[in-house]
Amino acid sequence: MILVETLRTKNMLKNRRLARAISDAGFGDFLRMLEYKCKWYGRTLVKVDTFFPSSKLCCICHQKNAELQLPDRWRCPHCKTEHQRDENAIVNIFVEGLRILAEGRSVAACGGPVRPKREPRRAPVKQETSLETSSHAA
Ligand SMILES: [Zn+2]
Image 1 (cartoon, helix red, strand yellow):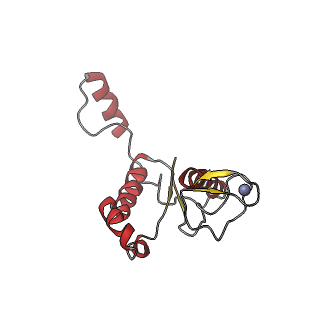
Image 2: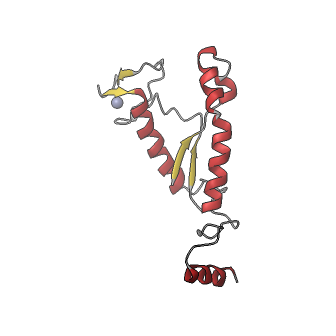
Image 3: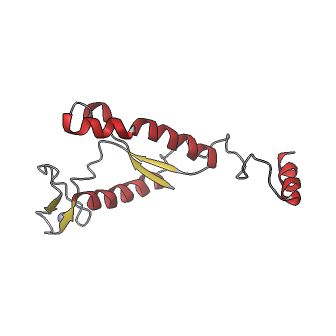
């Protein structure tokens, strides 16, 4: 299973400081390729919505800290836990992803009827493997 947080890159590109890094990384292309590969290999891809407050939610007490301005480190005003922004967000994305998965609203895109065999398409080196592959294909 792969969990990703979708980002609104069009909005983020308006931010000059972020624009270049986002353009270079090609997040949209990466996500499309990831979906395609997950479909191909029958893997589960869970996309956590861009509006989920992964950075602003305390992963310990689950209080949302709306005033947070994305500092690298912050202390939850409710439970006083010290957080590193990205580590806290990862825990929140993971938990939210599992919730989405449990609700069954993940990834209609993945593991569908186009699911291929796990064998590579190239001709295998061993003769018996070749026979095995052809019997599966029949
Ligand atoms: Zn907290």
